[in-house]
Length: 429
Figure 1 (cartoon, one colour):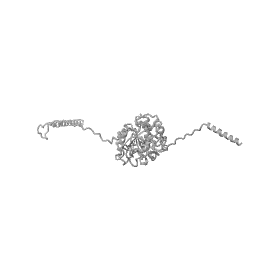
Figure 2 (tube, rainbow, N blue to C red; figure 1 turned 90 degrees about the horizontal axis):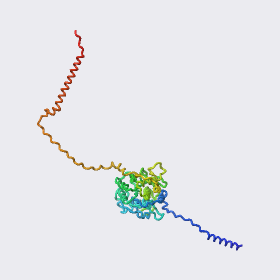
Figure 3 (cartoon, rainbow, N blue to C red; figure 1 turned 45 degrees about the horizontal axis):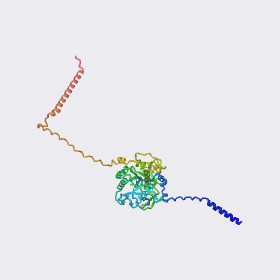
Figure 4 (tube, rainbow, N blue to C red; figure 1 turned 30 degrees about the vertical axis):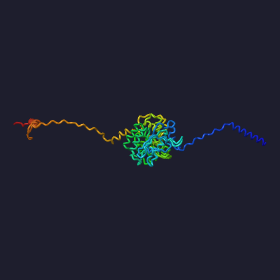
């Protein structure tokens, strides 16, 4: 029996081996590539349609000028992204790549990495909204971190950016005042006249900005408000104002510092470059569009907030940025910038401040000399009447007086005669 069991066991082993050899090997289940934790933290890429917009364009052929504290050379995420720059603070490097300031020295690098970061490898490292767009690094100094007045820095930086091919200009700062220096009139008009989209941060309540201030109040710019992870207007990392045109994430943002360190930060200073990056995507996909039509496309395709009943609102503008729709939707063209007209504003409100225009010096007019007076005919006493006074004074007066007397006497005589005729006579005896 044992031999049979052994033979049976051997047969079973042989059969099993034969079947195993004949059966195909099971297909191994593919292991999905691990998601890069940095990319996973960039929630705005998927939630705001940016990764879908990349199916059409990643911003190639466009240039974003970052007027800020300078884009550092340290981050690998920005290798090859910066194609030019300049310093306007008076204390930075000529190429605009040396961070300016102490507390704000990384600000420009954070902004740039959100707008057009390249990542560190395929699907790794922080990537910007328009990763194939070029960057211009224009360094300025906030507060006392400059030897040039701030208004002059900004005005000159805008002109330089326009002259060096910027399609989009990002301004992630505020002055906390509604008004702006008149020198900015010409600088911003220069950008608008050269068809450049200017994107501006609204400012943050946490830093003391209760309402939007310049440059976010300048007609023609696209002002960006900030929202939290749930799409609600941020209580700390945004402010409010009627000039807000659109909203974007402003909390739990990533940024690459000038030395390459990755940080988490808040503020509309980060919301603005997200919108600037989307503007670059639109300009890349639709190079025929004017700056006004780019802004119009961004606000017309925005996702309205369900927390307001009417748009635009002082908290959200026209709604939350939607990159996929901004790039692919059919949007009718407009003939004017929906963000208003700076030139018309200047005509209406700067007129009272302007000095009178100089006028030409009038040509002297020569007056012909008067004829010489005739010499007196002879000495005559002022008490005796002259021929002129007799002709025009005495004689007419005498005639008029005599005529009046005669008329009065005639009337008197006629009245007596009538009275006498009416008086009855006594009867004769």
